[in-house]
Image (tube, rainbow, N blue to C red; front, side, top):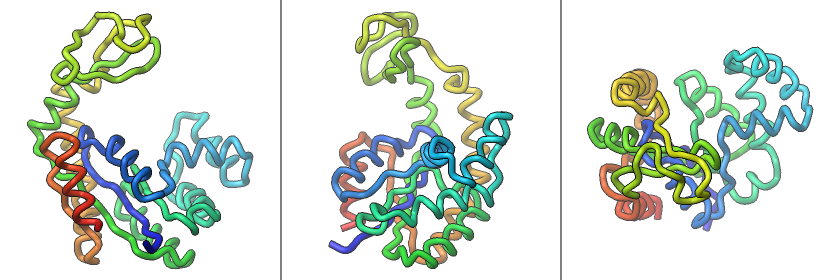
Length: 218
């Protein structure tokens, strides 16, 4: 099977993280997230990583040109050239998408597919508002799926209590979704116009959604 490269798009609560893990395992891809790439560059002490660190230490967003430069360095490495990449959480803007297109052309990274997980707002709000996290181990659970409650002991580590993040409350989720739609709409249209977009119905449970996704890929 030819090396492929996948960009995974979708709103908060669409299940990108879960599906990314399965795609990486099943297709032998290298999983790349912007956060991890930046942290790796900082830890390695590269020139671009050192520049990015000054922004990160100040709590500021790393400028697009620096992010693109660091992404380019990572995409040029041998493991990506041999196995292909799954980009999760990048690009986030039209400017980043256009810059990424140029980078991939330079590096001769072909067979690009962009998967967009489409999920109704009411489904996303239910998923996210039901999410609970352990204050000790960071485990993630859901009140609807796992039958847990706020304040109970973590089913995984048994040490910490489960709590709800402030940005997982319904009013905060609604605002996050508005922001996502505003930023993602041009990005989705950009890839659709290039014939690269696969739109996948993500409203169901994990397995049916993943089966639809892989059926389109295969």
